[in-house]
Length: 308
Image (cartoon, rainbow, N blue to C red; front, top):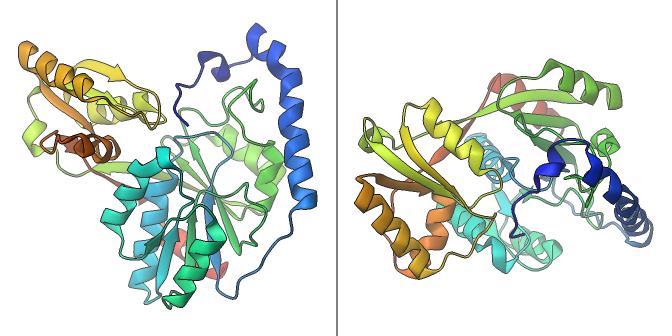
């Protein structure tokens, strides 16, 4: 979805309250979907890594993390992701990180392909709202800088469905700073849910240290990317944000390169943005790659395997 999240999603205000009646449409559509769509069960475990906050919660890095964890445990996992043309950046990024990856317009087709390739565990990158597939483990993702925004459903707020969806999940991952009050809120909805913290670690920073940079990003939460760079000691002279999954035009990248050169800045972006930009012929754009780290990873690993 190519848009910048409206600022009124961050808190309860006049505009969000005015739009609240329209959120009833989201509730009704979710209810109808849950009643008319028949669930299909597959004979291999299915892990769903999803969210209820629209965009920017770290589903893809977590899916890759789980994939690598299961590979070390001698499983044969596969990541599947529903194909959307606008998500080709995430698709190409995941393809570059894992060997077994399937992306089709129907998730069931991807699962069937994975089964024929002898994969024994499916990791669904997104799909918590897909009621056509029975999942063995639901992991819900949040970002500490957003959490649930104003708590309203689309379009009055950033939520795809009501917070009670947490009761269908066994694990919650909150990326960023710990928030005890939010954890209590989750526990009040589901006392059995296990909550873990995660954080991002940047890999290739050496060539950027001590240099002033122009950072740009077209992801769900550009401000989190900029903050991550600053937290890792980079000197950001200028920040430029684009909508999530933004289709850059060649002249826009040329202008960014020229702007950075004129100001004596190092141009830098996200790895996900890089996979969109290099299709335009720009293969030398600097980017930083990110690894996800789970705090208390041993406990997370046990909980993951226990639910399978």
